Amino acid sequence: MSKKILVVHGPNLHLLGQREPNIYGKTTLEDINKKISAKAKKAGLDADTYQSNQEGQIIDKITQTNSELIIINPAAYTHTSIAIRDALAAIEQPVIEVHLSNIYKREEFRKKSLISGVATGTISGFGENSYYLAVQAAAVLLNKINEKKNK
Image 1 (spheres, rainbow, N blue to C red):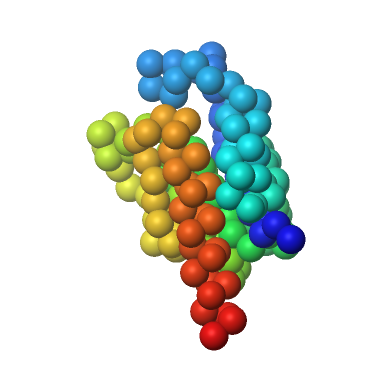
Image 2 (cartoon, one colour):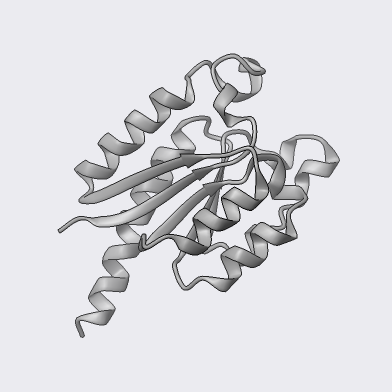
C-alpha cells in the first residue's frame, strides 16, 4: 500500500511556465505535477497535488488531509501567512517546505520564512527539481518513521 503525500502549491504557481521564467523556469505546473506523481509512484508514494491562490483554502486542505506528509510551496504566503504556519504547526504530519528559487538570494522581504520554523526541512533554489528532491526526502522520512513504528 502506497503512503499518501500531499503537495500544496501556493498563490500564482498556476502561472508557472509564463510568469518570470528567468526566476521560476519554463515548466508548467501541470508538467511539474505529472513528474511529481511519477517520481512519487516510483518511490512507493501516492501524491495528491493541490494549488490555490486563497489562504483559507490552503489552510483547509492542510488541516483536513489524511496524507502522511505534506510538501508545501507556500509561495508569497511564505513571508506573510501566520495562519498557514499555524495550520502546519497544528497537524502531526511532517512538512517539507519547497521553493523554486533560493529565497535567501532574493529581495530582502523574501529572506524570512514564517514556515521554516514548523517544517521538518526546506529545499530551495533548484527550480522544479526542488519538488522532486522533496519527494525523495519524503520517501526517506516516511520510511524512517515506519521503521520506528515497527520496532
